Amino acid sequence: MKEITGLFKEKIWDWPGGLAWKISEKFILASIRKKYKIFISLIKPQPNDKILDIGVAPYMCLGANFLEQWYQWPEKIVALAYASPKEYKGFYEHSYKFKLIFGDGKALPFPDNYFDVVCCNAVVEHAGNFEEQKKLIYEIMRAGKRVFITTPNYWFPLDTHTLIPFAHYLPLKIRFRVYKILHRGYFADLNILNLLKLKEFLCLFPKRAKVKIIKQRFLGMVSGFIAIGELR
Image (cartoon, rainbow, N blue to C red; front, side, top):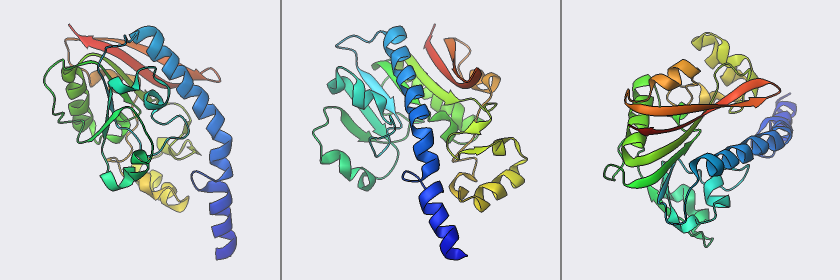
């Protein structure tokens, strides 16, 4: 039985090689491509604009780090990573033109308005409780003249972090138990995954922020939010 369970987990459920992830990959990638098109069309970055990208992942797949992969002027990007530099060894094996730094998005080592644009793609939901999420948004707004911030919609029935439909609607203890049973125990922690509703997302921004919300949709349902904003 253990061998069968292990084989199922490896072939069907594990990231990134499991069938469940391979099936979802094209839909996730399509969503990220839409985000990038929205970024280009509404932010309208210029060749000399300095860009900070908060929360860069230690891999280049599934559209992760879409700015670093697709942006026309990558040498203008400062990519902020949270994890240990050891996890990013693969980055140094390639001649990427962006600058990689390590730090905390809630305490950015830059003066006010240092960047023309700050991008934060699908990081807010991993920042902790409401107050911690708010710290992150305030720092982003402080350091950038314009911001591009995305997060999944709590009310979308399938959370793409776990691929377990409806589980995030359950009471916390039951939800975490389900995650652990279905080998998603890493996400059984609000410091790791704390999904937001639209009203909660908007409440994270300073009162003097001018914010436009774009709703991304999948099969007619709102799957995520994109906030484009600046301080008045």
